[in-house]
Image (cartoon, rainbow, N blue to C red; front, side, top):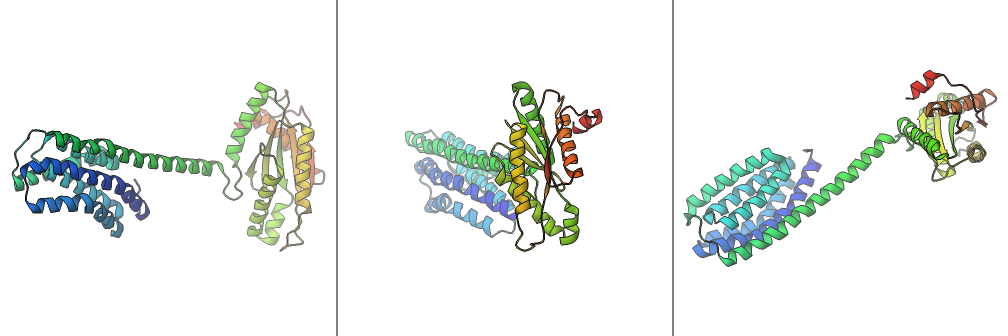
Length: 359
């Protein structure tokens, strides 16, 4: 568990609710068990302070501590020690004792696992010995009907409070997991899919095309003379150009299209359920939009794109061959003057090593 200050305070806040609920309703459990023995006034005062003041004090101790995580773990040990004390004070009355101590054990095992549970158990034993030594109650007294009723709220409400805390933690973990998954598949500069994630989707789309006989096109996009842009205007402007192209891609493509950053100044797009003519039309609009755009701060900076497109066909044996056709189309676009969209020539033989490289 992360022991940073922020995570430590988060841990303390999570424990505040179950501690407040547990001690609040636990007061009645202990009071019902102690009442027949008529304990002295100081015991009642201590019981009230513990039941309705300690949860706030424990959170304050964690909050002002330089190491709130460790402070909250100490608070849990204090909980166990106090719980053991009241168990000893009530003469180990079976039902109230088991009810109170088991709920605290639930806290300990949830907070620190088996080892922390054992530490808490030792604190409970020490507290029970101390409570019995001070008050000398009758051991294992008979359980009354009132004591049974007093234990019911603890048995019903407290597990619900623990469940609520666990639910909130599970929701937060789910959000964190999704965020990590997104980070692992997203290019940090452009916000598009990264190289690996996009190629994984390309393999999936290739399989769908084979199984469902779907029309599909894939395109590779290159910013013309991008190295000159970096050399002339600097890498910060170069990064800005990459971001602008990613924004243009997002704005120009359909929701079903899958865009990614292939690497450097090269981008990639999968256009599902799209013929070669439709894909050409979509990407031609993108090319014109980028070429006609004027940068306010740099009016002399004009961008152009070279784009290669390959449509899925039965002659393709794997996703690597499909991508290679788009790459050859991109090469044709660059070698014939750039700033254009070029379609692949189906049937171009692909070297087996390229397919193996894709795998």
